[in-house]
Length: 279
Image 1 (cartoon, rainbow, N blue to C red):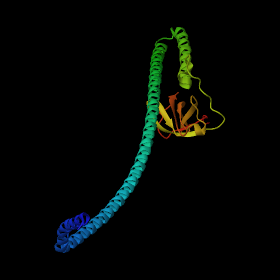
Image 2: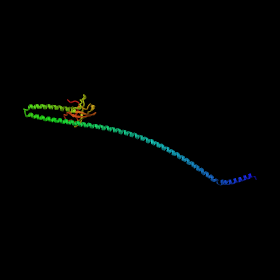
Image 3: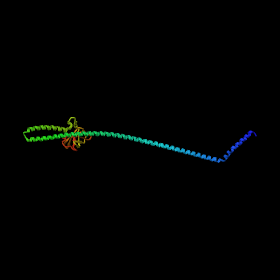
Image 4: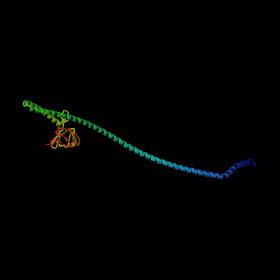
């Protein structure tokens, strides 16, 4: 036997010795390997199912997230619309408040003007009352003088000439005072320097009624719509009796008020006013 043959025999024997354990192992553990393969396949299926479930859960989560984002966007738009509406209402309210403030300022200015006019009326009333008191005192003094003159005339005929002269003197004084009183009654304070001129009545006849009388001031139910003007002088009468004259101081559209001058009787509510003296 050659060397090569011996070497081949030895190699074959080694291979047989090495292969026997492998064959023995394959023969004894074959069923366990198949069971492990099935278990591994089952695990693989479970992992695949878990992956599918996770994917479905992820898809559901994403859908819920998209829905939540859509709801949140819609809610945000609604809130923005509400905020815009509230901002518009707030701006309207601020404009209304500013308008009210302006109206209050205008009303305050008007009230201030009315207070000034009321003060002016009070001053005019005081002036007229003082003038009337002076006229009354003058009349009282004239009456006293007339009484004294009458007594002197009755006492003696000797003093007749002197009394006549004195009487004529007093008559002149009386006429002057009566003219002054008549002027005051007709024109009120207009006879004084710097006072306002009385406006004569126009050709249009004005007829009205006294609605209120208080402290020398009378109100009537006709105004600028009927042609009444400030400083116009109207006649006050009751029936066919002259009561006095009304000098118009304040005029509105449907009413007016003024100072009573040249009073013959006490004016009262219901007396008539006109632009002409009744025959």
